[in-house]
Length: 584
Ligand code: ADP
Ligand code: MG
Image 1 (cartoon, rainbow, N blue to C red):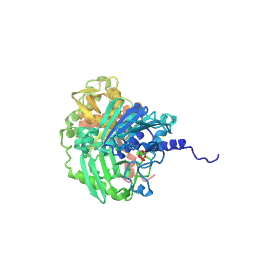
Image 2: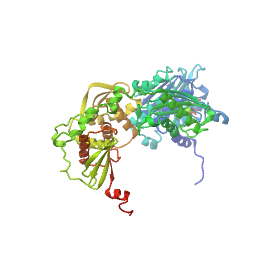
Image 3: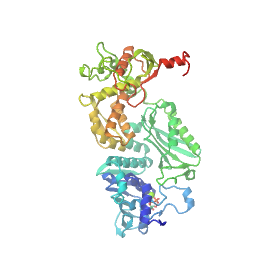
Image 4: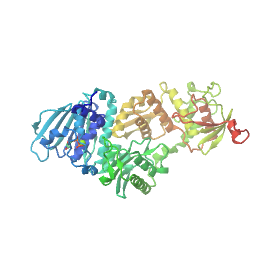
C-alpha cells in the first residue's frame, strides 16, 4: 500500500478518539472553554445522558464573529501563539483541538456574541462540515450545542455505558470544576430536572456543602500553607470521616483537575496512623505554583502532569496536610454519640447477641436485632451436619488473645481465628440464607435524610430496588437527598446514615459487576459493619458461640471478602519448629 496523508475528516475523528471518550469528556472541554472565556455563569443542559444533547451556555467574553469558523479548525486557538507560551500555560485549554474533535463526531451549533460586538452569529457544523454563518441577536457569551454525539462513529456509541453511568460521569465532571471555581455559578440540568447547582458566591465551603451535603461540608478541615514556592489550600476530612476508596481525593494544579497517584500517596501518608486500613480521606486540594514548574502537556486530556521538582511538591503536600490535621485534633468525631455508636458503643447489645443461651444453638444468637429468635427453621446443630472438605474442623476453644483472636485446638493442631472475620462469615451466611423468606428489615423510629454527591446519588438511585430486597427502605427526597425509613436488622444498631454510605461506597468501587455480585457485595459490606470488631474482649460463652457458628458455615475458612478467618498451625509444623523432627 502506498503512503497517503489522511483526509482531514478522518484525522479529526482519530484525534477525537483521544480526547472525546464519552459525553462527560465533551462536558469537560466545554466547561474549560467557558472558564477560559472568563464566564461566571455556566449552564449545562443534558438530554439522554448526553447522547441526544449537551448544551453549555456561558456569559464569558464570547467569540468575535470573524473567528467563529476558526473555532472548529484543528490547532486553532486564541490561547497560545508562540512556543515560549507553551512553558507558561495559564489557561485550561491550549491545544486548539477540542471543538474540532467534538464537531467531527456530532452535530454542533455554536452561537456567540463577543462582548465588544453588537450582534451575535451562529454556525452549524455536522461531522466536521462547517455550514453557512448567520447573524443572530444573542446576549454576550457563548452557547455551544452538541447533538447526537458519535452518531457517525458507531464503534464509539457501542462502548458507551448505561445512561446512569454516563450521567454519573457528567455529574462528577461538573462537580470537579464547581469545586475549583466557587466564584462561578454552575447549573446542571438533566432531562429537564435541576441536578446540581452552586451559587457562585465565591465561598469555597459553600460549594463543598452543595457537593457533599451539610454534615460532611461542615466537618472538612481547611488547609492553607505555602512552602518552597508551592501554595496549598483546600479541604481535607478529619480522620473520623473516611471512604473506602480514593474517589473523593481530588487534586488540582493551578486549578486544573489532575490525577496523580503520588500526590494521593503524599496525602494519605500525612494521615499515617490516623486512618484504619483500607480507609481513605476526602480531600479537595489546590496546588498553586509557577506555570513553569509543571508540564501539563503530557496527555491530550491534560489530566496528567509532570513536575519539575516532584519530591518538593509531595513534601509540601504531606507537611501542609499533617499540620492541618494536628491543628485540628482532638478530632470532633471521636466521643460524639454517633461515633460511639459506630465504634462499638452498643456493646451490650452485641454481647447479648453473641452469648449462647442454654439449650440448642440457633442462628438467632448472632442476630443483634433478634428477629429470628425462636425460629426453629434455621436451627443448625454443629455436630449433626456432616462437615465437608473445606468446612471447619470441630474445634475446642482455648481462649482469646489480644482481644482479637480466638485460639482453638482442632484434630490436627492449633487454630488461630480472627474474631471479626469469623463473625463476618457467620453473619453473611445467615443473611444470605434468610433472604426472600424472612423479614430482614427494621423500621427506624424516625426516618433520617442523607445527602450524597450528585454522582453517588445517581448510583444509589439505580440500586434502590436491590437495596429494598436486602432490607433498606430508601426513597429519593429532593436533589441528591434520600430518606431512610428502614434498614437491615443486622445494622439496626448502627447509624443508618453510615450504613447507607458504606453501601454506596461499595457501589462506587466497581462499575460493572454482575447484578448478582452487587447483592453479595452489599450483603458482605453490611455484615462487615455488623460484625464484632477486633479489640473487643469476648466473654467465654461468646467465644464459644462464635466458634460453633463458624463450624456450621458452608465456607468457614474465609470471610465474605475472601480474607482468611483462621490460620492453622499443624502438629507437624509445631514439631518441626520445636526441633522435634528434622526438616524434610
Ligand atoms: P483551546 O481551548 O485549546 O484553545 P478549543 O477547540 O477548545 O481549543 O477552542 C478553540 C477556540 O475557540 C478557543 O481558543 C477560543 O478562542 C474559542 N472558544 C471556544 N469556546 C469558547 C467559549 N465558550 N467562549 C469564548 N471562546 C471560546
Ligand atoms: Mg478548549
